[in-house]
Image (tube, rainbow, N blue to C red; front, side, top):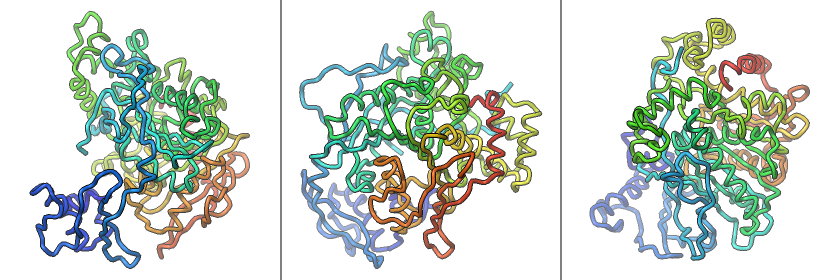
Length: 568
């Protein structure tokens, strides 16, 4: 990341600059200050800056590269923008406006436009909100332009003459990090695949706009509108991607965090009988399965009532018409406030069981093996739950209390069972981190893997310390985030697992030499083998096959048994 180079006071919240060189930091940061003062980064605020002359950019002309040598010396030099990069399709708008009367409705095809459309910049991000920060559950017994009209399908091609390439469709990280398409550069994945795939990313409706639920939404709108956006995009890809060099029969969908939750939703969509088949492979990085209530359950109806109250639609004769007419800023204020009021680490507006697209609780569909797709690759991080637990106050709360807050339908018996399962794992804080991580991220991954028994499933664990949720992003999106473990062999091995799977449905296929050993399929009844991606204390790559912990799988059995109460 680059934020820590010009905001050093944020270092406690971010990281120290990965390249802690005074000359480099001065040259890099001074570019911004000089431009702010004189509209020209060539003006020397510090006359000793090592930045060479910086010419204005015009298509295909010079840009300034800020890098370092293998010997850890600054390297600042003008370079030419890649002509091939400029030729590639960056994105196309695939959706008509979803504002006004189309708010809260299913996506519609856009109007036909015969003229050339601008595709050289990324679209506005969809409105979003951070997770809850309340220490009790109220439901118990960066400056980026946002827009309502934001549903888009950005695509990146490996070159101007691609043909019949496998396709990797990825979901934006919708609510656990950031959700603007611009930070996920398809070029990163194309490079890792040796230019062997077409990459499509999906930016879809979030929060209230994507997942407002309740009887009135069902009667006069669309439940799970955000999922329907994704389904619309897949169907568009299925119909049109061949025009851009992609093969619609070789689609793999990949999601990160809540995007991985979206992958799970499409795996179980339509009771596993989606027609036509929209993807053959599915990849989840940190599978996300929070409580997914029936659309008219008490919790979604309570959230609907809060939205109505906060937008002054309570007395309206037609509630949905009122919600469609209010200014988007009022909805976004309600979106942020309601999410913020939620229990710490939880999200208020998430998918629901709608009775049609999502016919039943996902864990039931997985148990019954009602799934779409031919093959699965799932990666979890060692400590998925830490970011979603208040690390300051959790030490004063025991596992029983935490379980009751996290799952408000639990009674004393279920909360006591959680306490018994987790009491020997460590401190109360460690227990709560484990409860959050296993119930929401890790155990749903194993339910998903088991559903692909008889098909093809691979499991991996990202364990580079500290092994937190989202720590793996920089290894396959290096242009957006810097990997903490700067080892070329490790990065190549880890990143290539995903692109090899997208191309061949098998991470064992070598696109280039890697240090990854043979990777067996995961099977709950026979081989519970998964690939561990870690490093030694001497900072050498440690990639090896390990067996899934029996104790972990026992705890997962408990979470599956109480799925009706956790609403998963």
